[in-house]
Image 1 (cartoon, helix red, strand yellow):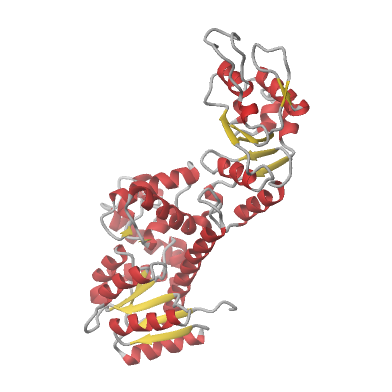
Image 2: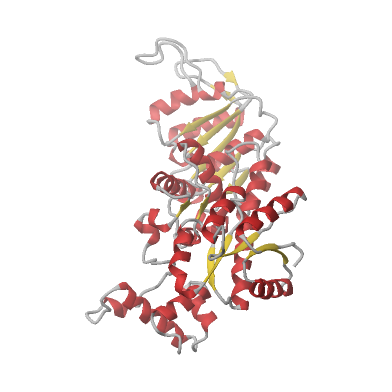
Length: 462
C-alpha cells in the first residue's frame, strides 16, 4: 500500500502490545506504543510537533491511572477525526458498547484475533481518510455552497462546472429535488467572467403564470391594475450577470415562447410596453423533470429545450453516491452545529451504517433535516442510532441489520426480535457452510458483531 498508515497502541500489557505491533507491521502499518493513557497523550503531542499524527488508536479499557474511557474523551477533544478502537475482556463488552455510544469506532475482545485486528483497523483507517478528505475539501472550496463528496458522479459535476463556468454557454442542470441544483448554478456563476455581477434566481414553480411573466420581463406603469410605476424584470436585474431559472419544466407554454425569443435575440419587452430592451444575461436553468419526455408529450417546446441544453449537468441522487455520506455528515454537522450553537464532534459507526442502509428519497436536503433533528435531540458527544427516525433505523437492532424471512410473518413466527435474529443467523450459517466471514457479509454485519451474536445465542459450536 502506498499510503502510510500510523496506529497508536495503548495497553499496559507489554506482551499484548508486542503481539498487536507484530501483526500490524506485517500488514504495512507504522506502530506507535504507549503503556498508559497519560503516556499516550504525550506521544500524541510529540508526534504533533514533528508534523505527523496517528490515523487510528487502539486503546485498552482497563489501565491503571487514566482508563480507556477517560482517554477516549481526551482523544475526541485533541484529535476528533481519529477513530478509537477499544480493547476489552469479554465480560466487559457492555462497557465497550457504552463507549461506542460515546463515539468509539469499534471494540475488540482480548486476546484479539489477528485477522480481526487487521480488518477493524483497516475499516477505521478508511473512515479517518474520508474525514481528512472532507477537511481538505472544505479548505479547497471558496464557500459552504460547494459540493462535498469524492464520488465519481460528484467529481464529474465539479469538472463540468470548471469547464462550463468560464464560457457563455446556456446550461441545463438535471437532478431530483434536494440534490443541490442551485449549488451548481452558484458554482457556474462564480467560475464565470460574470462573477462580479448579479446572480438572480427565479423559481418558476413558485409563481402564478401571470406573475411569473411580470417578474421575468418587468412591466410599465399602467400595464395592469395596480401597476402604479415601472418595474424592471429579472432579466434586467441580471443584465451583465446570470439568471437562474429553477424548475424550468413548470413554465407554461406561452411564457416558453417568450423566453425562447429572449434567448435568441437577447432582447425583452416589458408588459404594457412597445419598446424593446437589450439584455446581456446568461441563462442557467434547472429541472427535476425529464424534459425529453415533456417535449414528446407536447408540454415543453423542443426548440427551447435545445436552446437551454447546450450543456447538461446531471447531479446524481444521494442513493447513487453513498460513499460520500461520511464526508457529507461531517460537513453538515459542522455547519448545523454552528447554526444551532451545539457542537457534535463525531457519530457512532452504527449511526453511519444506518444512514448507508437508507435510500434517501429526499436526497441531501433530507439528510440535512435528519442530522439537524439528531443534533438538537442529542445529549452526548456522539450521535447514535437512537436519534434517527424509524424509517431510517428500520429493523436495525444493536448494529445488526436483518432481512426477516417471510416465514416469520406466519402464525409460527418467533415471539420477539431476538428469536428472529437467532434464526436468521442460523439460516445464514447453514447457507454459507458455517463460514464466519461469508455469513457476516450475508447478514451485512462485521465479523466481530457475528462472533458476539454467536456467543450470545450459544451458537459458537456450529
